[in-house]
Image 1 (cartoon, rainbow, N blue to C red):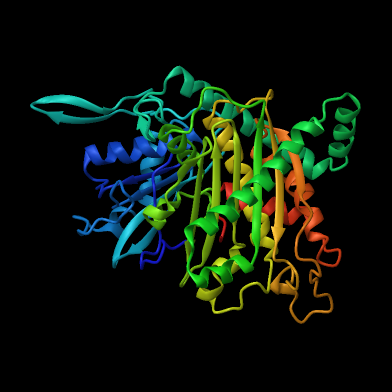
Image 2 (tube, rainbow, N blue to C red; image 1 turned 180 degrees about the vertical axis):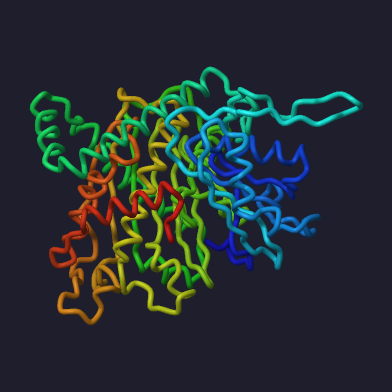
Length: 465
């Protein structure tokens, strides 16, 4: 989405799944080494994006690339390089994005590793008459925070990084099994859930209730911060549009974290950024007033912008593993740009994609806090407001069934699942979470296959949102 009140089209910030680099010439061996090592590291991390021609602060470089960008970053050329140096070749998607009249390569690396990817061939360069290895056969590059506390690529992973990588591989294999069961043995899931409940393995209601309580706490703190900042009058219109709230509580609570900059940077860096408008975005893009601040032992931030894009976002990051976010519905964020009336449509597909990305981000938060295991549960509470008079999707306009909500606020929609849940096992959880809200639209229900398709597009970074 656009930055606060500026003409910039997008603000980028580095994270474990998002790397910014200056101009890199693939025909230059040291530059080629950086490209290959970063792409393999992103693959081992579980997917991500490499952007070329940007500064570390997210701004595009003001100088032209010293080479033909379109020729050097032709998709076939980049794919050939990956296949030449990756032990387990993977497909990459290459596109050129325009910033300030310059073309900048964007390379997207997909998820889905089954085994760690190694460098399969050394890259050598002669220096002072002697060969020097830029890439070494057998190294396992990865993305990490452990080397300097910031997202970075390391040539060879540590034991902890390797353990995490193997868990990703295991989860992807487990996800394949889950996908098969979901598509071919649809009746098995409810039976297993019933068996777990009978055996006393279902999440504790008292733990799950913590998420609903944190949802209400977040709503109160949003109102207090909104009043404290004395926001411009035109923002009051955005508040009247309503939006989506979510709270996540990790149980048992992670230990060893405090409300310091290391914790906030760790959380913001963990956001997968699978769409153009990810949850829990870095509000610092809105300027000093929008930067997160510590209040009552947790980080809180309020961001508002209006213009071509509209946004009203409030976030909370608690080092005990509690998170909250309130934001506008995506269709309202882009309504002015699309020259359509805001607060008229919910946007079924956009809402599904949003919940899916929220779940994936929550799983990433658990991983960043070192609790992505079966012993920890993620408890969720969602609430949608500003629904009265909205149509569930513009697709139904003028049709025989308009699916319009007569109520303004959804019930609190709750779900819980283990912190090591694989991405492709989220489909029935998304469906369960959103069903009470969709039913407000005159009994509307979405299709499981549509959720599956949108989740797949999201994790593969093919989402149109």
